[in-house]
Image 1 (cartoon, rainbow, N blue to C red):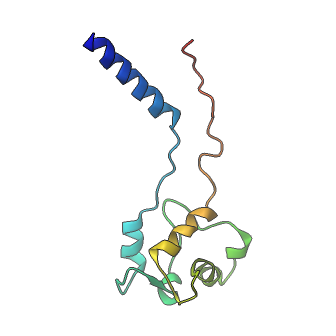
Image 2 (image 1 turned 135 degrees about the vertical axis):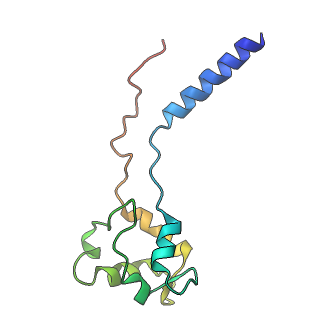
Length: 115
């Protein structure tokens, strides 16, 4: 009886894991802060944000409003919601809304059937 229960639990856990197979990559936050937070205050001032080249593993947002010669300034102003001249972690996560959804083309239906 226990073998049947264990087999059922393993089967169900495998099915649930495969049904949520597309999991977008997270930014390398530790590396991002280490590279760009030069004064180590856990926030980004404009002079630090001007050096940001991308948001690895994501590229720079391709939205037209954040392109051009002053793209870092434009993105800084967009992310600095409270307009205090620095971007905190809570403000920085808003950048995720500017990236394309990596799971947009993920097939929603499995290619296999059990019944």
